[in-house]
Length: 304
Image 1: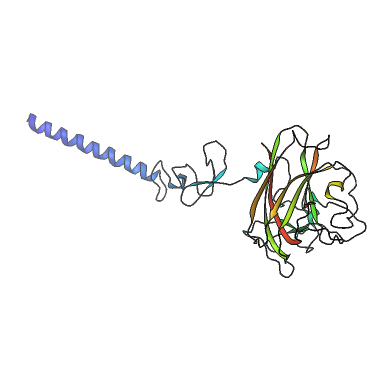
Image 2: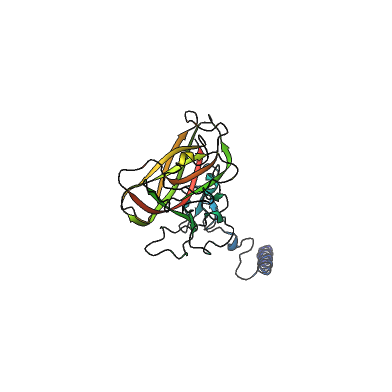
C-alpha cells in the first residue's frame, strides 16, 4: 500500500512539472513575434560585434578616442589620411565644395564662386585672368583632362614661369584666412594636392605660395608676367614668398601631394600678419620657359 501511494505521488509530481513546463513554454511563445527568440532580436546585433558598430559607421582608427575612420565591409576601422575638418584651422573651404552659384555656368575665370576664395586683382589694363573652378562633370577645353582620382570641386589655373610681356597666362587665387597668422607665432605647415591637366610648353614650372596682408580694393590687372612682381601687388612688404613647389616636365593628371613649411619667428612679414594666402606662379623665373595648366585641391594649413 505504502509503495503504491509513493509511486502515485511521484506520478502526480511529474505530471505537475509537465503542466508547469508546458504552460511556461506557451507563455514564452505567445510573448514573441514571428521568428524572434524571446528577449532577443537579431536586428539589434551590430554588423561588426568586434567593433560594436555597423558597416559605414564612424570609428576610432588609432585609439585616440577621435572618430577618424569608417567601418568597412570586412569589419575593419579604416582611418582617413587627413580629415578636411582638421585642416580648416587657418585656410577656409579647403576642398572648394562650398560654392555660391553654378560651377559649370562658365567654363573659366570663376574662382570667386567658391566661398573664401577670390581673384588676386580687379580690373584695368592687360589681359591677365583669374583661376577657374570646376568639378568632375565640367566640360574642359580641348586637350585638357580632369585630375584623378575624382574628388568633387577643384580649382585650376595656368602656371607659367617667364618674363613674357603679355600677362595672358598670369593667373592666381586668394584664400581669406579664418584667423590672421601673426609674426613670432611659431612654425606652420601647408599641404595641397596638384595635378597637370594640360601642357603647352613641357618644361618645369614652379607654383608660388605667398602670405599676404590685404584689405580694401584689389589692385588693377598686371601688365606683364612680372609687372608688378608678386611681391609688390599689394604694396611693398605686404606679400611674402612662403615657398615654391616644383612641377616637373611630363607630370601627369594624377594628384600629387605637395607640402611646405615656414617659420614666423624668423620670417620678415607685415606687422599685422597674413590675412590671405596667395597661390600663383613663382616670381623667381626658371631658366627654361614652361607653361602648364594645373589643378589644385585639398589645402591644409596648420601650426606645428
